[in-house]
Image 1 (cartoon, rainbow, N blue to C red):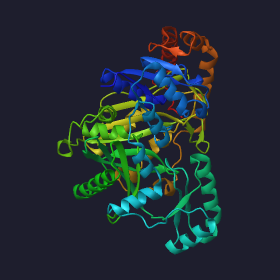
Image 2 (cartoon, rainbow, N blue to C red):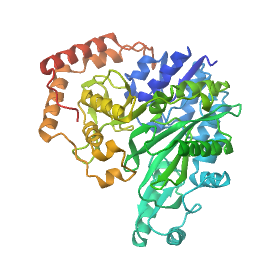
Image 3 (cartoon, rainbow, N blue to C red):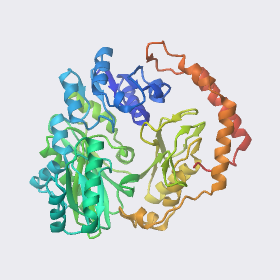
Image 4 (cartoon, one colour):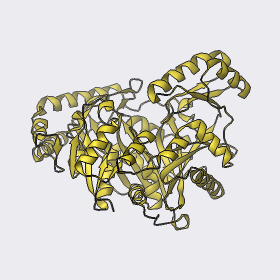
Length: 517
């Protein structure tokens, strides 16, 4: 087994991976930028190394620096998590050339599936149904002709896109040229590749994805489906496992096709095959994500698997410890993504110091976050703060537990989308399962909290910031050894200070706190 693994990521996913490594008794190595010096994954890992400034291109996206750090500290492998370099085939290849193991799929599989046009062609060759669409397009003139042939409305997509970026829905020919040009510009800026393609836009469809995992011995297993239709601007915010719309027969078909395309790509490690499901039960292959997904906890809670641990085991060369017949699903799980965005102000990103964070707990609740009192939310990285997952014996039970969990969650200092999530969970159509990917576009969901409560929380945050000062952070920062390497124990002074501050604040307003914003 690996002796030492470097985690090439930050935040809650880095902490999740470090915990899996600890379960396997593997020495963990964290990396961090200057602004992440006090982060939870840095404190929890067995060792940590500074890799540069806050700008991700000079730290977390600097593959050469990360590989050099792994070699210098004696790591055997690198786990990329998700985001940053997780789906970068060139980085995976460089890791292997350096004599290290990349905990993920092979560079060849990543390249084959990472290009959406190539993935469509592979799906067609594997007899999967695909949405009517085009090959790659680099000319606006050609794109207009293809769109008219397919028929409006259409979707313009970046060939190298992912995570909901590089997508435009175009309703008619008059809007097309401008939308296609903007999509190409966004694709070039985000992915370094301006190539686009066109697909028929299907209305009233669900976004269903199937989790797969394969080992290096040819075994590939489908680990159930997830419902990911609750999206805002093509970004998932609530996910479920299983889907209320998927029958046992449909589940078998989706699983079969997911395994089929994974096998066609000679795939190993975890991956997710995404489909669009129509109201009449027809489904179409959308794409395959060659990495761990943000929403993997819902699958783990309902199947009893540990996908991160399994990633590490199959990367080392072990066979999967189970097959599809051994996976018995149990109950229902729902995940909500807590992000630092202001639902009172057009969902603009909210930055600043979180002076108080209290996470929910209790039966059936799982929280993955890197929050702590005093953490600074900066504009340098994704706005995801935490993931809350609720499990119940039934879907209704999981929803009720999630509503309780969100009501317990306290974040003071920045705005969050918690009120927005609370209102969605309380809507009749959501509770009945009557939704699709256009649900949030059709339902004008308004934040449930008023401006007076927003002001109250802001005033409390200001008061705590004034009274706290920065002494704890300075004490914690001085806990390092001066050469950019930290141990995994953190600062006892900072921890004690945070406990005193949070205890005093809660004692003044116990039971009367406004909900987080």
